[in-house]
Image (cartoon, rainbow, N blue to C red):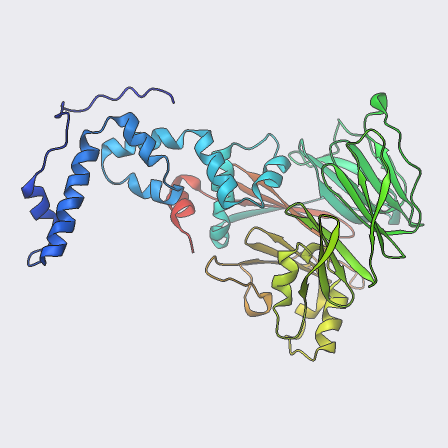
Length: 448
């Protein structure tokens, strides 16, 4: 711990002193004996803190969560000085980022470039509760002029790279300048799906062939042949899972010397999608069942039924962003569940980001919802959006052109957030800014 050059205003005794006057002043007039005893104990504790060395006070206060630490700055000038010193420590903010945003902090930090500091990251992630008051700037870029340039998807990579999956190629852009990257070359080809991690590029061709490509040709590992009849795949940092049309699930450990696709299991039900969260592969079937692959065994976790909150269960197992919403509403109709009319029937994408939810529609409308912490379950059908954008209104395309939202993702910045939105003909960057100088206490203290 760095030493603090703190000099108390006056030297105090080596031990705290009992002060009856302080104890009596702390208790209200006419207070019962118990209240007086409590006030006396409080005054005695205050005496301890008053004469403790600042280093020891810092060791005590640094265990407080940020919202209590910010409040404690108001106690006295001595505490304000000590707490300001604690708040400059990046390790303090790193600890609370990992505690309060354990499912979000890692990917949020990887997507930022330059890599955001821990204090700025905590402040930015905490400020989503103040989204309604954020100032916004909208920038359109990546306009398509012909069919091969139309967008399919995009993926935010590390080192400030935005990979845009067009119909005829994959083009890489710089997230800060919104121009083509000078460090990555485009990949030409027609692919149905694309993904990559630090070492490998995975593509699924139009003929359902899965290709695995190593990024570093100088250190080439033996790459297996393309896998045929693949309908789904998901890529993690070191593992590739994929599913064929016979509902066989395969696993490739990409960090091994010899990359081999091992048949993990066969599902007797039609697999609709797969997801990965908390180190576990999850499987969603057309029978509305969610399974998890645990120690090589398929375990049934949830059955989506009439009286359950299906959105909540899908979000728990990270299926929102992979969901086919036409099938979802067919499930609702089949179970005779009453649900709101359009535009919620026109959902094409839903993505959760912490407690923020992005919902895109066929007509280019994007809604952003925020779930308060005191709700155990989130139901989008019962809430109003905090922000709403209509990108179909000013796209300049003919009225019959489909302007559906294809994908949404977020980059955290010291000033706030960048929200990237993909449509078939262009991409949009929404810059959401907060005045952290005036809102620091609200960002940290407000806990909904």
